[in-house]
Image (cartoon, rainbow, N blue to C red; front, side, top):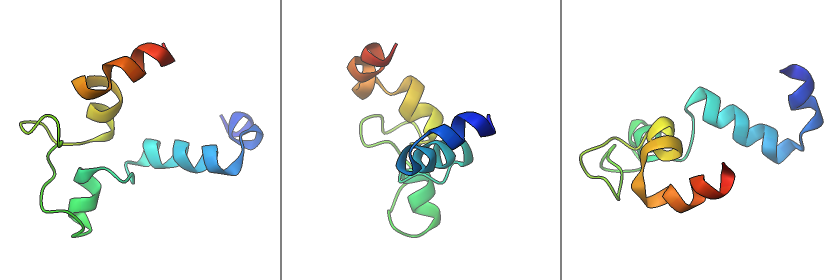
Length: 69
C-alpha cells in the first residue's frame, strides 16, 4: 500500500488518508469539531453522514458510484 500512496499525487494521497481515517469534511466529523449542528446526512435524515454512508449507501450519489464502478 505504501508504494501505491507514494505514486499518487499529494492531493489524492490526502483524500485517501482522510477517507481511511474518517477525518473527512462530512457531518459526522464536522459535528465533533462543532462545525455543524447534526451528524445526519442532508439527503438521508435518518442516517449519519459517515464515510461509509457517503461512499456506499447514500442514494444521492448513486449516479456517481455507477460511474466509478
